[in-house]
Image 1 (cartoon, rainbow, N blue to C red):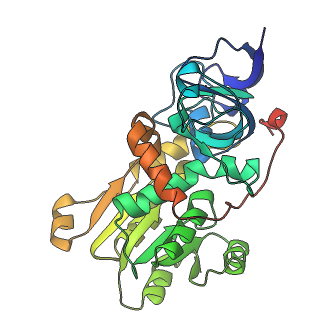
Image 2: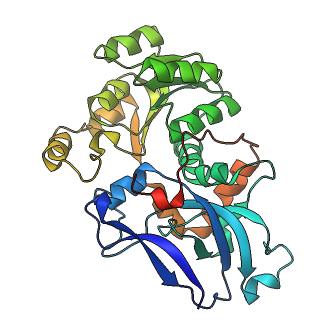
Amino acid sequence: MVTRRVWQTHKAGAISSLSLIEQPLGVLPDNKLRVSVRAVGLNFADIFALTGLYSATPSGAFIPGLEFSGVIESVGSEISNRNDALKPGDRVMGVIRFGGYATSIDIEPAYCFKLPDDWSFEAGAAFPVQTLTAWYALRHLGSVNKGDKVLVQSAAGGVGLQAMALCQKLEAKPIGVVGSEQKRVFLKNMGYTDILVRDETFESQLDNELAGTGLNLILDGVGGQVQKACFNRLAPMGRLIVFGAAEFTPGKNRPNYLKALWHYLTRPKYDVLAMISDNRSVMAFNLIWLWSEVERMGQLVKELDGLSLPEPYIGRSFSFDDALL
C-alpha cells in the first residue's frame, strides 16, 4: 500500500496538538496531479489556523499548509490527454486550501504552475501565497498607479518584501515600515531607501516622512492604533488595504485570550460617512477565499508570471520532521 506522511492536528487550539502520522494514498483521481512535495511554506495563516484564530480554519481534524513545491509523480487520465498539460517530472509550485504539510499531494492542475528552472524548491514554496497576497492587494484592490506613495507595514516580512518588489516593478514609491534597526539595514541592503523603524513617536515619524503630502495606498497586516495612524494620513482617494492582523499573533503554543480580547475591543473603527466626505476607503480581504475561484486564481498567476519577479527571500528552512520546533 502506498502511503504519505502528514502533519495533522485533531482540532485547532494549540500548535502542540500537531502530530506526524502516516496515511494511505488512494487511486489518483482522473482530474488531478500527484505531486511529490519537496518544500512547504510557513505562513502566519498556518499559525493562526492551528491556534483557532483564523476564520477559515476547518472544523475538526485538518492538515495545515497553503503552499508547496515539488515534482509531479503522475497525472490523471483527463489531464494526460491534453497538449498543454503538466507532465510527470515537471517541477511545480502550487497553492492548496489546507493540506500542504504532506509528503505527497493530489491536486487539480489549475492550482499548480511550473517552477522556474533556476529556482530552489524552498523558493517555490515561499512564493505563491505571499506574492499573490501582495499582488491582489496592490493591483486588484489598491489600483496602484505609477508614482503612488505606498506605505507597506512589516516590510521585511514575507508579504512585505514581495509588496516592496512589486511596487518597484509598477514604478510606485514604496515606504517600508519595520520594527527594528536590523530590519531597516536588511531592506537597505536590498536597495530600498525609504524605511521607517517604528517607535512610540510613529505618528510624528509619518509626518516627517510625508512632509505635508498624503499616502495613496497602505498595505497593513498589523492592525491596532498603528493602522489608524496610517489611515489618518491617506490622501483623498487613498486606500487602506488590510490583509492580516499580526497584533493578534498567539504565543509559542496557544493564544493569550485576554490579550486577544483587548486587541479586539480596541481595534480601529471607521466611520463610513466620514470616509465619503474625506474620499478615503478601507478594504480587507482573505486570500484563501480565492481558492474556490479557479479562473481568477489562474489569471492572477499569469499576471505574476509576466512580471518575471526574482526568487523570494528565504529567512530560514527546517526539516519536514521538525515542524514543532
